[in-house]
Image 1 (tube, helix red, strand yellow):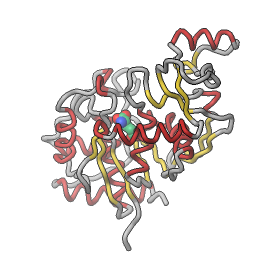
Image 2 (cartoon, protein in one colour):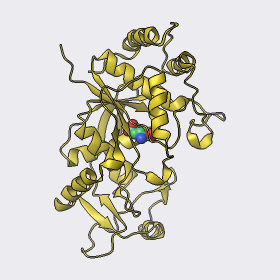
Image 3 (cartoon, protein in one colour):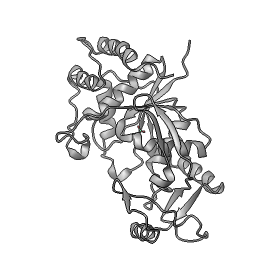
Image 4 (tube, rainbow, N blue to C red):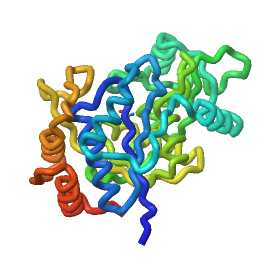
Length: 293
Ligand code: GLU
């Protein structure tokens, strides 16, 4: 029976694949295969200043070395500004997004006036200062109007989750002061446009999910199923990232890097050819993680 499952791996080309990003790539590929679904790759290069030229090609090559080939040509977010603008315009017309003129110090001052704590995990909770301002002011950024309803969702690994986006984050940025579209908007518009039914990605992104579900609802898009995978610990126990020195993977030895990624996912696979390894890994994946209906 043909499956309606569509999954994706959505790397930001800020550098080559590292041990952590391969875990997300492998897990999303395995889940798609276990569900007889399709697996897409989307290059998330909206944040152009953070992107490294050539990293996109390198990532695609590293994936191919590991036998992870997308079922459709990859999509580059940098070519999709018109779609993001259209989504933002629609939200604005319906009063669900608004221009914001606040600088960081304006936001800090606004929070102080309201007697609210300055930050949550180092991030400022936007107090809604520009919500009711009249049109015609110079917008620095554009924000989504949140509301006081909690967003409840269930992760296939982490279980039930809830977040009150308005209290925890505030009206969040859809288009930045530098004119670039924010990750939250681009990811939701593209998951919707590509018909993504299942999102499998690293646990470091779990905290974005409530915001993305809220945005899906505002844009009348369906909410996919989510599975956030364990992270690869970095040297000092913190999350491994390009910023703390995660090394580019040497995918000329694909079985070595695949075995390391599988171990993080609680899978033990032994095979001497990549294609056999992947076929076995799909069976282990289904036993360990189910198929996520
Ligand atoms: N582009 C994001 C990253 O590399 C991942 C986005 C996602 O999977 O939703 O961190």
